[in-house]
Length: 378
Image (cartoon, rainbow, N blue to C red; front, side):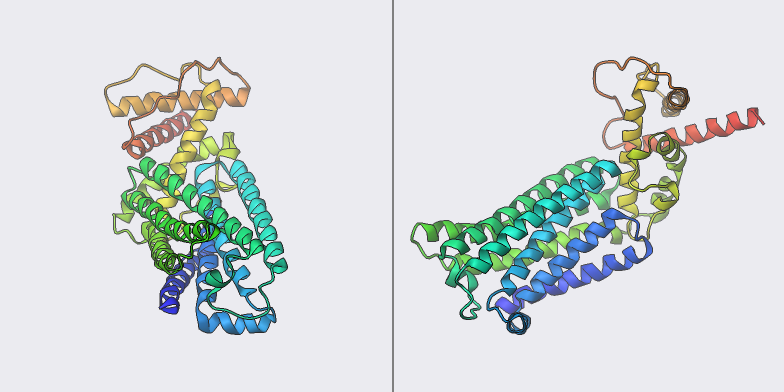
């Protein structure tokens, strides 16, 4: 049963990895897609190595009994690290996201180095055992090793669940992305059930109670959590919602996004507007990211806008035209180095659930006004 449960998880991991690797082949400059593909790959490797017919020959080839467990646990930690990097690239401008991604990777490598030291020093390499947790968890160094592993994995899973839930609340205009993020959050929580079961086993073991069934109960949580997690992150790619409308909205945001990107390059995921062409299967993610970057650019523009909060208009078209004028004037002031006092209070914007329609209207008004000005000066 152990091999069947983890074998199913391994198969799901390799399918998801191949699916995203194909997208990555067409979009190698996308760091978020690289992080997602890496996370899927490490998950697939971890579950594959756990299957007995794979585990035993690799363990024998390494020449150190039970050392393959370090490879499995390392891949699981790296899975959570790259999943956190993916969320960082979705949430933050490129420079800040890269900095956070480096910090996350360094923290992960420190954890792995400590785990490697503990397992190599532990007296568990005299004989091979398939019942690793039940046989060695009571040993002092292994108790520290397994505790560190569970803390690293569980903290990553909880942050993933929290962040995915946050992003889902912001993606009201992208239903398949919203559903996918919610399912991703559920998958992370299911996977956390693995940590709860194994962690409970360690706590009871330290108290002198051998609750071996907890070790076995954890396995279905791991596989079910991974499958749900992978389904959630790939779901926006297979949603049937009118892709022409999505692509049309994505292109409609191009004039406004490009203008803000030229003024504030740090808001963009990619270094060039030409590097932000929507990849097949990732349109929901790209559209969501473009919306976030426009809001980031509008926030960066605030000091250059004389009246960042014009009187609200009842008509959407007039409101969009007023906003487009404010952005155009702010960009001109930015190029001339003219700033204004930023009023206290938070940035106002359209009610949640209408961001995409609002930004498309503003971008079209912005593009129309820009074209008109160019004709007037021709």
